[in-house]
Image (cartoon, rainbow, N blue to C red; front, side, top):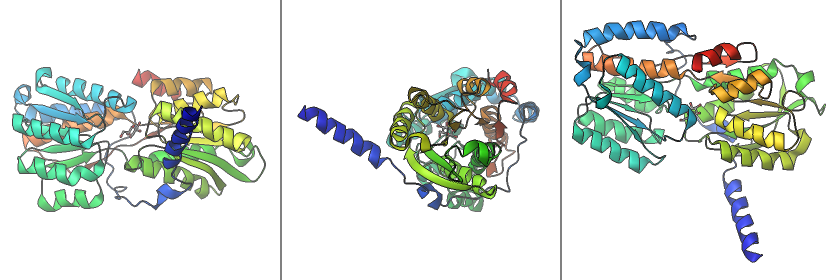
Length: 372
Ligand code: BGC
């Protein structure tokens, strides 16, 4: 009995220690890349990128088959990064790299492990590195190690801060970042809810949008911006908002399920919208919503980001209000193209962007056909 009480208290403390507090994440300032987005926002992007890369691959004198690529992923267990790395490997092979010369390693969400992996790649003498950092704040250390070894470096998915990116430009280093601007994904989430109209969403009639926020890793700019800009979009549409709960789900489905279950039991029917920083957590939220006897589209609304195929099926079925396509095709292709550009001597800008796509019932099938 005593043991049980202790473990319940421990569990409660753990959950409590992960709470962000409503509105807290928006205090974080990060880099501004809004003017540097370079990639188009639809399926055409993949074809165009591929044509460009064919040309670049030719420029590398067709000797890509001998080049060694080291790829560090922050954590293999991440749904989105699993799609990303699969596409990255396929595309590198399509461009002429030999599968045997592409090594992709799992950082297991531990920066020390990943730093060792980078050191090993340097010792092995890889020709180019593609890195999805565990902690974006470790980028300075990583960059120094890799630049010192004379290896070109392409960061993906977790954007280092503005001062770090400035260092690459100032020193004219072969270092770049490939990713989308997370402010856009947050804005799209907010807009999808705003488009439903206050009368539809404000079921308790208090004149406000009562929401809860489930955040990804707060160290990650994607989590910070999605949290901030989803709510900003509601406010920009002239809606009043009321944050009932803001928790950190670390991008993880099971964690989010638990957090949303807790929040639903505390806040009951007052919750009108559940914002999740990614689809994995939205899928967890949906499980909690259904267990609580609530129905998305009828008495609660739910949005995520990524456009995982399971989430797209939910959007089509009406069990998710919407999601945002985080284009892993465009991002992985651009990352590979950037690596090729370094190998060929063509070089790259220090920031390579892409666009998110808003996904509602209207276009979910189209996106599903693309990702499946
Ligand atoms: C994705 C998340 C993923 C995270 C990993 C984000 O852009 O939306 O699903 O967990 O990247 O860093």
